Length: 67
Ligand SMILES: [Zn+2]
Ligand SMILES: [Zn+2]
Image 1 (cartoon, protein in one colour):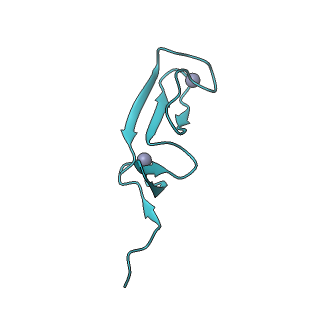
Image 2 (cartoon, helix red, strand yellow; image 1 turned 45 degrees about the horizontal axis):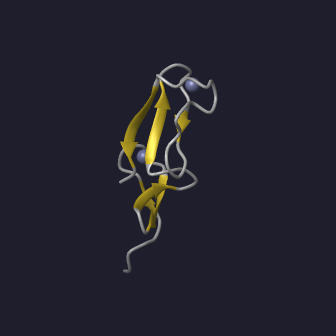
């Protein structure tokens, strides 16, 4: 069997893809970010400086790195 391209993040179970920068969440970013203010979670390439849902800048934390 050959290694499959599809892989799941060991931390959150979401699909991850391999890029030149390493693992990233499919449709998201390397970091899974969580807003402790409104409960939003997600990511993008790079990282958000503020929550895209509520705009909070101080409660947005990096939850984990895709792996
Ligand atoms: Zn993850
Ligand atoms: Zn928020």
